[in-house]
Structure formats: structure tokens, C-alpha cells
Length: 334
Length: 85
Image (cartoon, rainbow over all chains, first blue to last red; front, side, top):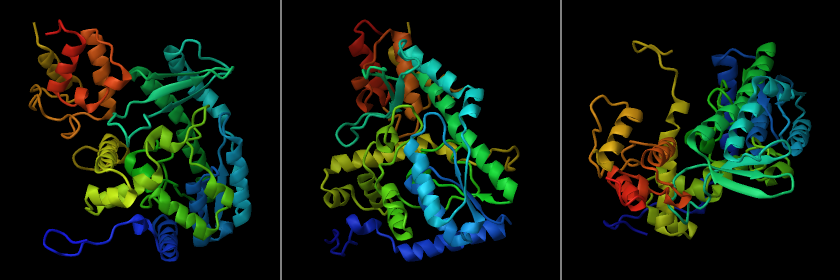
């Protein structure tokens, strides 16, 4: 295909996201060693492992960088975690020969009022909500088909299985998110305890989708010394997972939030489109590829692609504060 | 009596932009494109509209056609509440 001046346009297709996984792994491994040993002067790595694809890849990269004897996998379940998370995390650590520590943070969450504060807000929306009920929040999932704005809905499930959904009012949304964020922030505190106990660094597990679109908690799962995969699209993390030999069960597991008592996928909760579509649209947009060409590559309409691009921009702007450095006075960093 | 546009401009200037000089954009300026509001502010606008004008905002109403400028929001309020200013 040529542009208006007859110049050949670069190819753009579904293979645009493909990595040279060996080279990329080597580059990240070198970067981890440089960061941990020479910049931070730490002796190894602590990784919070959840049985999800991102933390599994990061654990694999850390093992390559430091050897299993200088890496610790920390499991941080709580009362509402999926039991599968712990099982898969243990399986992963065993495969890599990495020692693990399991810290159940439920008591800490009860102590901080995480569940109570969150449930209080949910009960204001659904007065019948209470013990035995499950809940989740999500964004409208029809981004490709409708130009809806990012407004969360709350879905609750009664003990008998009845499902109710309502748009979240502002004050309840703030309280539910603020309370739920105790989970990620408590995990961060526990990771730093184990890192400081050993003079290790905390290695984060955010991918590009999470980091750039703000799908993380400030000083929660966003709190780390290094973020070795924050430049990789989700679909690229899966490529590394295959290369690093992450267990098949983890590779096949649908990414979940594992935050609310009712399960939800990450696409449902936040991203609103499958990663296979989001990543390619985003990459194309970053490279200046027209929406029409991106649409052709994905068998979508131009309008659908433009909705995804707009949503990416809106999310980046809305969550910019999560990525900001601490603000100090008189130009000095805080 | 203030028009819907005036009330919306004042609310955004005071509560979202924290501007001491009123609302600095035209009524047709896109909230989202100009970065005037973000996703959180949309919820604030929904709450403002419901509490100030007594309008019920349905889920399907929360689209850029209704919430993306002073003009569009004022028109939306008028459609929902014919006697609004």
C-alpha cells in the first residue's frame, strides 16, 4: 500500500506486536541486574506472585537475572482471593526453584476496615447487600459498539444467586475504590517488609496496559523499586511467558482483578476490549498508523478503532496523577 | 434567574477547574477533547445535574452527545426538564 505521494507505507498487521523474545528477555535481565545490584545496591528480588501472567513472567525474569537463590516469591492472599491464585503461584515457584513465603493479609484488611468500609458503601446502593452476598464493579463493556463514557456499575449477587446492577453514584464509587485499595497497599507494605528483611528490591509486575492506563493503585501494586515489564503490552507479556516456560495453566488463565468478592475479568473491570484488539490499536496509534489501516488489520470498522483510541487517551489523561512524582515546593522533588 | 448554561459553567469553574476567573472555554468546547473533565468528573456532572435540576440521568444518557460540552449538557437538561432555564 502506498501513501498519497506513492511512497510505500510500512506494513502493519497482527504480527506488529511480535517480540524477539530472546533479545527482549536478555535486555530486561541485564536491566534488572543493573538496577538491583548497581543502582539500588540490593542483593536480590522480592516479587509478589498471584498466579497471574504478569507476576509469573516477572518471577521468571528475576530468576534469570539473579538465580533462584536470590529471589523470593511472596504470596499475599486474603479472604476474597481466588484459591486458584495460591495454587498456581506455588506451582510456578516450584517450577523455578524459588522459595516462597505466604502472608495472609485478611487480618490486616479487617483491622484497617477494608471490607467494612467497602461493604458500607455497597449497602447504600443496594440496602439488601450484606453477609453472604458477592459484588463486583465494572465499566460498560461495549466500547467497540457504543460511545459510552467510563462510568462504573456495581453488580451484586444475593446468596440465592440473584443478580442486580446499578450505576455507581459518585460518593459510593469513591468509597468502594478507596476501601478496596487497602488490599493493594497492604500487599505493598508486606512486600517491602520482606525486601528490607533481606536487603532485596521489590520488583513490580505492571505491564504497559496497567501502567499507562492507570490500572493500578498508587503506592499499592504501583509501589515498587523497578517495573521491568511496564513497557510491554499484555499480549507481549504472554509471548515472554511462553519463552520463559511459565506453566500452561497460568498462560491459559483469563486475567482477573481478584479484588472483589465476585470474579471479574480485567477486560470487564477496566479495559473494555479484549487485549488482542486493544494492544494492536494502541501500538498502531503510537506509530501514527491511520485508524483505517488499523481497522483493516483487525477486521473492525474505522469508527470502532477510533473509539478505542479515544478511550486510551481519556484513561491516560484521567490517571496521569497516578504516575506523577511527588510534588515538592520550589521546584524540588518532594 | 440563571440559565442552565450559566449554572453549568459556574459549577465546572468552581468545582472542577478551581478557576477564580470563571469558565474559560466556549460553551461548545469539548470537555473530553480539551481535557476539561475526565471520567471522574463525568460522575460529578451527573450528580450535579441530578441534584441541581432534579433530572434523573439514565445509564444510556451518559454519552458524549449529552455530557461533552456546556451546550450539550444544557440541551440535555432542557430535554429532560422542559421548564428548565
